[in-house]
Length: 354
Image (cartoon, rainbow, N blue to C red; front, side, top):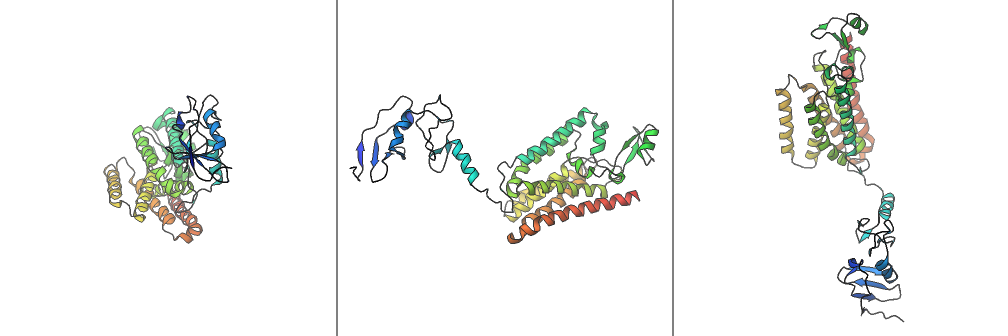
């Protein structure tokens, strides 16, 4: 009959590949249950029946790897390549995956599931922008038909290389050998969003995409994927609304800057609500606004500030509602911001067309 008091036993012989278990000067933990071995130096407890298997076994995923380590959940042998650190000991990849499937994803503070890959949305947006930029570059740059179709103008126009002509239709423009550029008021409604994915020069797209890749994952980790994407697109939409209202009708505008400024506004409000370093963010935002106005001859202050206002409005709707009202009111309020932007664009287009 086994004794209930601990006693020392000599270490079992080790093979040359079992160094991970040294030194096995063990204590038998007695009792009526299964016999356990206690490694005094490593603080590890294992079943006596699995000790021999540990000393002579190979990894269940890599049969060429001899190992002395077992998964703490299923007790299958695993090599260092398969070890995943757990709260106690190591687990195999299969048990880790099974545990993730059984565990409910945590909810974010402002609703929605926690994103397991918070950079994914930003990576997709960067990819879309890059593909469109390359397509424009390969089809003529500023003279590309794709560029004329995707960039935003409040009003369509007919132009030669030097002049804008008083021609109101694409057919008349083609008849005189000039080039017609679509505008929102002439029916190119898609431009209110596509312009936010359109760039011409490498500096423009580089600055915007770096800002998107830096800020996007941080915002998605706080807001969740759907809310972050809504913030981005609605900010682009409000930027377009400001462009069609406050830019000259024939001015061509493009770029993700409106959406980027909306993200900056979101960072500011989230930091303010959580008592973060608002002063540094205000300085950073102020510098960008100053650059916008200093370079207003080639930078659209309308798109930048319109996107900033939209981002502030969307973020306020997402984070400042009482917790018990978020599920009910978040999306209607975000939708309201988008509807107001679309209504402003339609009103301006009707004014120009009339």
